[in-house]
Image (cartoon, rainbow, N blue to C red; front, side, top):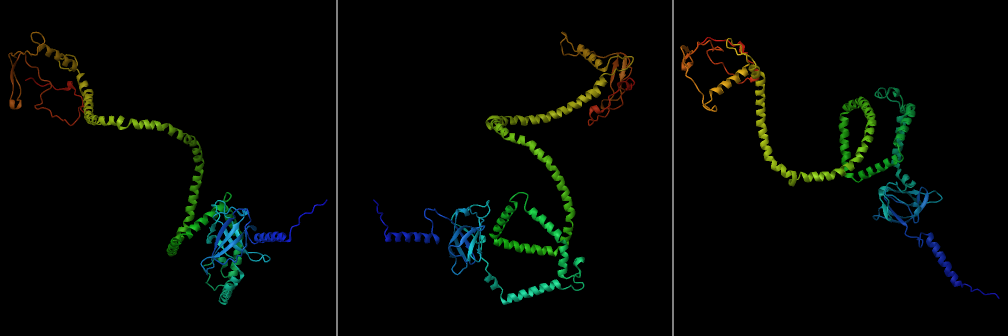
Length: 480
């Protein structure tokens, strides 16, 4: 038995077909895909006519990565416009130094597209909804704009320029006009001189190639980093237009001053080669010293690594030392000892003078008194044969015997009146006159002989600088 399936009505089939067609048209004309999430929105400010339409494609290196969803003019009649683009996942990420340029498509495609360059990886990332400034965008250059710029006056001026340029290349200079030129091109036309310059082009191109190779740097991305750095510099200069204008004015004044002193400047440049040669030799020596410097750095590195633990170990000791020298500990003790130290300083000054005097006394004893005390006086017939210091000690014994009292411990000196049959008279003793007395025996004489007056005393000469006396060379005088 066959079952009959329910047939879809014509009305239902028509509604389904209308919905499918509407969805297809919606998606084809830029509608958002359901359940696809929010797209990445990027805006760009263009200051010239973009000629973009919705949905013009957005491409990175020729690959479609999105489309234009909106073009809104800025300022009414102004050509500036803000272009809104939706970027797919294959066009991300986009960096802060990204650029956008409106380019014309091929003839078969027609219209224009946005050529997007996502920027360098080391630049910050842009968030959805960010806007590229006008400095990072450029509009299309159309042929009609180029032709519109070539008006009749401009074309006439261009013809005059080309004719003058041709005359300049084909005309020979008048005699003496090129006296300051290089001898190899004197008398030649401009074209002939340019042909002569081609002989040096090979070496010039070789040198340029060397320079370009050097500009690439020694490591990958050196040139790109340099370009990024220059971009940042120029961006900073553009943000300081007033200061830049003043700098240009000052730079112009500087150039005029240099032009006024061009002879001095020429002499300075002529003196640069010897300076550079000397600097090259100095830098060579400096480069040779880098090896020992690096070796020293490697050697000292182990000590530097231990410096941290050493400091950590020293910090507790420094804390204890700080507490030790505080006012409660050694600081207070030092404050109490300060007066004593001040008195000690004055005592040291007095002691220094005492030591200096003691030194002079010791020298006097060593150089004068001891040699004099060791001499033996030769004074016959009463010579004792003993050194002077022993005779001095013997006389002390005699004085002690004369000073005894009845019990031997007295302090009285016994004296006996002198007397005898021999009359003794001295010479005139100044205001006292002569002295008279009676001696038991006739005096033999005096030693040393009386010179008639006391010898002069010089207190400014130290004792040890005098010559020790020779007692045996002393003259004997007549008796009184």
